[in-house]
Length: 450
Image (cartoon, rainbow, N blue to C red; front, side):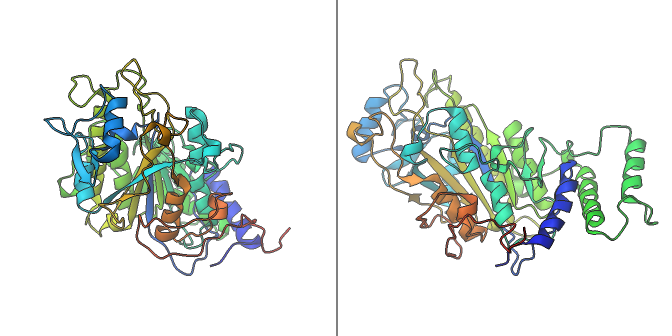
């Protein structure tokens, strides 16, 4: 694999200067031997999703303590609102039918008891979200997110990418913090030169891009001008696309809410073939301290969120599965995570308070789905973290590292997850194993350039 030194650093600075003005970054400093075309979608469930009521024990030694701890909230094993069986002693929420179908089709995997190392455990939303999205448990001062550092360290990307990363949101998430190439837009109509009258926009674009006569601001042959043209080309492609008339493939029906629209936007951007390699989005509202709702209740906010999550991911998979010009899901991996789980025992307000261990979901064409990965630590009081929460048995970075290595071909764990060592794959996704590189190093100046 190749790194980048003084000359390529200066080229990268030129493109970063373009990106700083709001245009997407063209990654001019990467000179790969093998190009990786895989895409990772990072979905964050903000608020602390109750993983024990998304995937719960249906039998075995953990069913009795689960029912005892949650007399009002436990998902039943029989009746109209019963949990849907997954595998072994575990089932999934009755509102998650699409997720269960994907699991049974071997396209969805569940990873038990994930989270941060015990020494960095926190029940603060702000701290936990920052630690996880930055990829640095216990530290918030790094200034870059784990996805941004992936792009910094990856050496198997094309020389130029029109839109390398997309944040389907109104603000760039911390996972992409420091990535000047990340395009942030809540909807397809957000990416515009400005909102002025069309004649003014066209005049501005022509003045900067040039009309073919070689008189445009970026009509020269320098690296900077070439990067500027690529940025404007991206602007032309994205702003010229009518996102409002999009018809999902294969009869996919997205939820008619913000989450559904964000997923639809990501699907459209994938199909535009702009080189996107990463996308991030949120689904919030999981901070269920009171009136969380039970499976058979008429007031069931948790169940409604689960249904939206399930329907959205089901539609996303259907839309990209085998869609022209190729099977996009074969190269797309969706990873779903929350900042922490909830307390095992429900509170007096029929809700659940901030906990610790949780689950992660991994979805895609190259996922070894239909399996429950990791070790479920048990729900007996003596098995709980601080006698209250599901314990963590899998460091969340282990799951993300496997996706980095096996799907994205990036073994530089010391850059992406500094301080994380002793990685070993769980087998959640398919792909080649590369020896992990734990050395943080200085990837920009490692050729001796001062």
